[in-house]
Length: 494
Image (cartoon, rainbow, N blue to C red; front, side, top):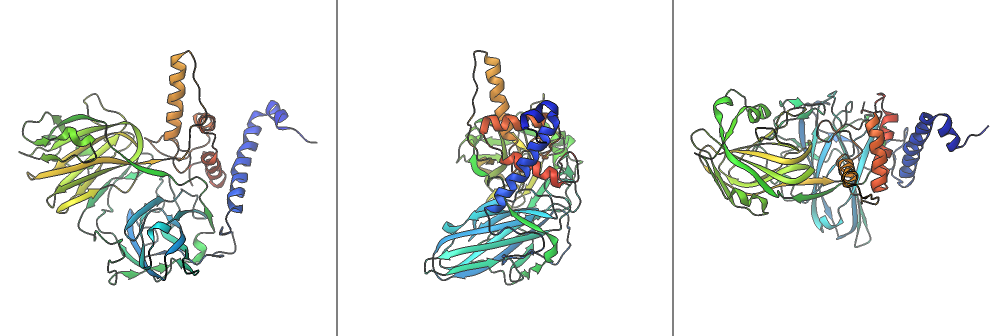
């Protein structure tokens, strides 16, 4: 006996949801796999790949660990086409000849499955010596964060290039790569919130600034260690598109003033969120904060200077929430400290809440000279940015403050308007909220947790709004696939 979808909906609506979910989840991945001849399948790892998973000789699951990896190679002719496939547990920044290319990968259900990104790097290569460089980050084995959980640390890279002389280059990650543990990031930071995001404390000058460039001498670095092939059984292409990244600048200076350190002295350097929460704000009376209003420009030239134990602060508004990483370009003496917190709202006392469903704050200790500080991780949706400049009495020149905004590459296709202004505004709020939930998959709550939940009533409606507004199901596809692969019934990675 056969039954139609319409009949099934009348008899058992829940069964219809299951059928549609499975069709999207498995059908979508079948299409993705069919489009790539380089998909790995169980039992034939490493298949057609030249690369292998590599890491250093340290722990398999280190805590809050940053590793720098490099591979230098020669090309006999200009590249006419070139692409890099890259996968990592847990996160990467990719550079080619010193130029930033992108970050990723898409979250996976490890250790059985791992997703790889494919990036076109044709324009970044040149005849002669070239360098692939990766800053890889591993959260910590078993920590309940929203990106991976049970995988060991590891990196996979494969470069495929066609050259103008008709030859081809094939370079994979192996024991010839050079590795060095990063020293600038502290690894003893607290994690907070449902998403278990770590506080970042970066001490500039402890690692070479030019380590990702081709001319850097890595002869003193260790050789990489090849990991057992059985660690990851399925290596598969990313289902959702690579995100777009663009720099956005604040549209408004909300507040400028100075801190009262009386309540903050008891905190350790690592207690960034606690200190930003405790210290009182007041008007400028001792500190300098010249041209702070120009921080809405791409080239500001503002000047800040601490005095009498007080530090100047600013609060900047970017006009709308972004999933973004703050970026500060400034000149300062060695030892200057910059601390920040970020969020979508302000408290009744005017400050940005550093303790909001977790503790969110980062700290940078400067080297001497002009420098750019950008935390490694996207932590939550941000509209407001609060920065404190702890200059120790020396002047600090701030050239710009911005966000590196990550945006899901999808176009608005559906629309709604009516004579009731409230309903029209409700539609706009709905699609704007849905858009903020689009990362590498569809997530729940971009401020609080950033988990890819599925079995919750509000997310079922959100998926419908996502499709109605944008006519796209890639994030739903991956969200459902993660659920079917997870051992947890709510769809959380596990």
